[in-house]
Amino acid sequence: EQIEHTEELRRQLQREKDILVDDLDNEKALNSKLTKSNQKLTNDITDLNVELERYNTVIQNVDKTKRSFEKRIQDEKKIQEKLRQERDQNEKDFRESETQRLNLSKELNERNYAYEDLEKRFKKLRIDSEASQNTDDVGRYIQELETVKRNYELMLDDQKHQITELEDELQTSEDARLRLEVNIGALKQAMEKVTLDCNNEIDNIKRSTNQRLKDYESEVQEEQKSKQQIIQQRKKLETDLQNTYQQIEEANRSKEETMRNSRRLQVKQMLVFR
Image (cartoon, rainbow, N blue to C red):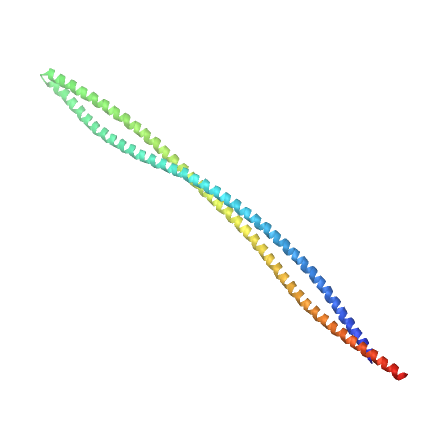
């Protein structure tokens, strides 16, 4: 009976040994998996740092591009403001020239009326002189009227010439104003396009980079969760191994006690058979 008990104890110890060996194999496999997971996590973190560095470089380049665009926009705004000032000055000159032209036209009309009145008086005087007896006085008066008439004609010609020059200046000013309007419109469209292109490029880069960062963060979080689960499994396995070690120690103590009892029993049997 004692031998059967010992044999049963041996088989139990063998089973516990097999369990312990399996647990050790599982521990090795788990350690290997944890090592690989740590290496992958380290690689992912390295990749993430590289991506962050690239992201920072992209952001710096975007900032440089943005500053370049802003400087270009500021320069074009200055040009646009200068063109506006030139346009305003041309419009002011145009209004002044138009006012001067209108005043000259009004004065010319008044002098035309005076000239027409003088012409009528001159014709009437000629008719009257033909019927008058005092031809000397009439002749002198006619000469004076002819002098006045020639002076009026010279004044009218001069004013007509001034009006023509003013009209040419007005046309030149109007052409310049139209050109400035076209240039301002084209510059405004160019500024709007540059601003839109810059904003679109910055938005696209930010969206793309942010999406890549989110993907990397998700991967790192998943790796961290997996690592945490492996650590928990390892702790559980270590606890199980510790319990198994304790059971083996207890079994060994029980085995030693059984063997001592067996030896004592054998001694007693030997004494009895003597």
